[in-house]
Image (cartoon, rainbow, N blue to C red; front, side, top):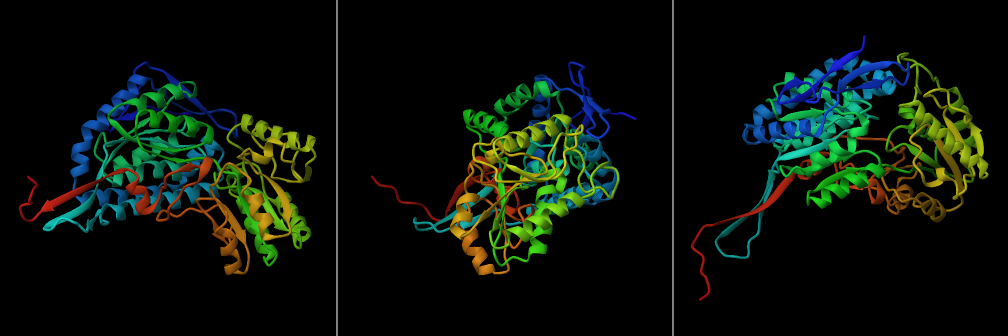
Length: 486
């Protein structure tokens, strides 16, 4: 049965003011999975109205009450694992394992938000003026405009709202057009059931054709004081430009062209298992997915043979089958795009070592290429699919140069049994994240998460995520009368 949902504004489900709706198509079946309200700019304004009206009370609510809401939301999310998995499979083709990972991490993000509510919120400063106490105090900014993507909808939907809410802000969330339920409306339901007051969180859903107008209206509203975006670099440039035009701070977590480096002392079986996960988790549709495998020439033959065999053995197919490891991409168009990148690379000299070929609907096989030339589009472009390019290196310097040969700088993995060697190499990689003796895909709610260069700026996670949505004020208290010149 097709799911039908409306907008969430002021704690209520309301239809779009123009009465329009839009369909969400299942990549697995090609059928309509859900029909949701298609907001217009007037709906955006109504959501901001409600968020602005709720701000004063929410920002002053007691910390124990606010903390309890996030703790309860985490419990409700975990209890709703099966429902979350159904929504993610229907909207994005996510496998059950990926959905469970989404729920587990998202619940921990809620718990981290709960902890942040009662964490210290400022510092005592040294003051040059005698008899003055100086303070640095963090306070909420007001209404935050948040944007959630579709690829890890439950994780990234929760990440988009949890820290701003914990800091005392209210939020208007523009859910992903491809996953409006699992990235937005499902989460609003949980939070309201957990006790979140009306208006504190609004969720806007929209037709894809209206996305630019919706985003511009939301960011341009003077009552919106900060912007929170996760998505592609191309769209992130637009969002960042809009935020800058209106002098609003933004946290942007964008695309990646991530490498996993396999050094000469690596445990090869471990390296293969790590790389398979980094390339194929969620069919490669993760900003941290490994798109480049850089392998020391002394172990390249063994690694390549084992890696290609492992790719070919992965269970692919129906995301509703719990044995499936690699499900469909988000759409047939996404699969066709990836096939085009592979075709272009092969035409320019790359070799297919596993996978390749034509897409089948929204499916594309896990694919390993070698000798991808720098003039192939795939060399620099983010594939956002289960495709990787393998290259070898003879020295650390060569490996570092190849890993840094990208405009992005999100994540990297470095497989070695020598931590000191790994740290020396890792410190020269221009990324926001690096994992020594591990692969490139990881996330923990207390850690600073974000990229460098074209992968964005600002950090989610831990105290960094809360500080990003606060106004830090300098406050002084004169304990005695000051003396003034003149």
